[in-house]
Length: 228
Image (cartoon, rainbow, N blue to C red; front, side, top):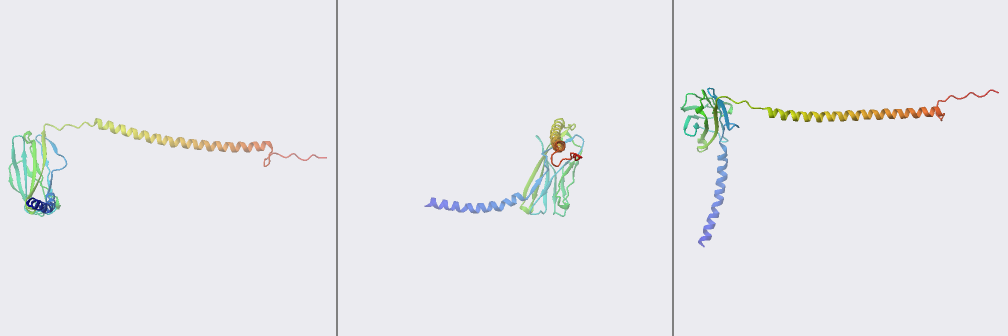
């Protein structure tokens, strides 16, 4: 009996757990952070690079906290820490670890941008950069996104030879098909005109035969009556 009772209690717990999951699901999907479509970006040593980051929340935000951190094989450090009071306030910095970093984000026009500009790049700046956001209005729910930076001596030119060859071949094939179609229409037009001309010749030839043979309807001259 006790076993049956335990199973009944266990089954009774499942609905409540399911409803709890349905309640938490929208919350877990509400706060989103994005660093763009590119997972890896390249920049030349000595130049500057914009590290993009935007956030969105279905429930709005108040006193939203954000961080940018750097992570390599042997180093981890927090680059900046800031706060956004509400959707009418620009992000404010509370901590900055590197003077080369400038916060260029804004929340105006609902951009929710907390991107940073990193100047005077060095090869040691290569690594993972993570943008992390925490929203107290969503019970301190947190979300993050990471982008990889590769600092190089120079940017390699992309060889588009293969692409150009493919485009040339495809363009040539399309051009050939169009030419064949036009040629086909032209030949059909010539054949049609030839048939029409041949038909006219046949009708004309038939009329001439009738005239020469003196058939009814012909224009053969009639002989005058013989005088007595």
